[in-house]
Amino acid sequence: MKKFTVLTSRVVPLSMVDVDTDQIMPARFLKQTKREEYAKNLFRDWRYEKNGSLKKDFILNNSIFSGKILLSGRNFGCGSSREHAVWGIYDYGFQVVISSFFADLFKENALNNGLLVVEISEYFLKKLFDIIINQPSTNVRVNLIEQVVTIVETGEFEKFYIHPYKKNCFINGSDDIDFLVSLKEKIKSFEKRRLFFNF
Image 1 (cartoon, rainbow, N blue to C red):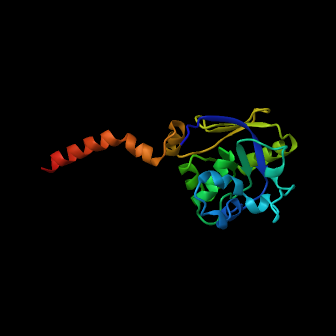
Image 2: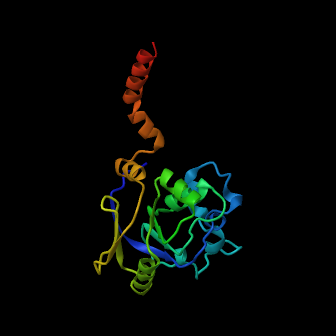
Image 3: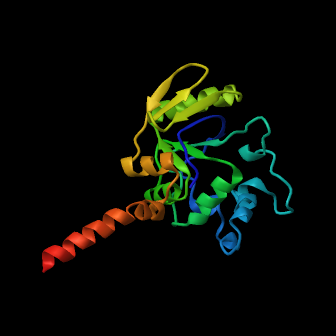
């Protein structure tokens, strides 16, 4: 995982609720062998016409909006559990997804794969959508250390929660295996003491 502490970026507003993993990454693309290929099929059926041309009314195809933060309506990532949905979002260039609620399995998959998911209130979510849709150049700062989301231009902010363990993983750029490896000497020491006291 890459280290993550603070990100300031423009935002892509996906103003839809109940976005499920089959729309994020359709099942027919789950057998690709390279993770880099998942970005091109992110929201495939929403981004492309059947003839392969871009759908002009889909937000990812609107050049006015760009950035490393994806803003979505409530219940993002519902449906079946598939890491491929997270891979597609991350490989597309998003580092953070902000919503008022995430499906539990999606949230776990995201945090395990270096995609920060930030849960905020419905009130602040609406405020973000309103300002970004009307002023696409708006920047949002996600400060993981202080656990704060800030609208840079106005200074308005809201705190968010993240499990301390996952926060530590992001700040240090380590996944679960890296964390266990970092405990190698402590584990060895514990095992020596355990064997000693068992005699």
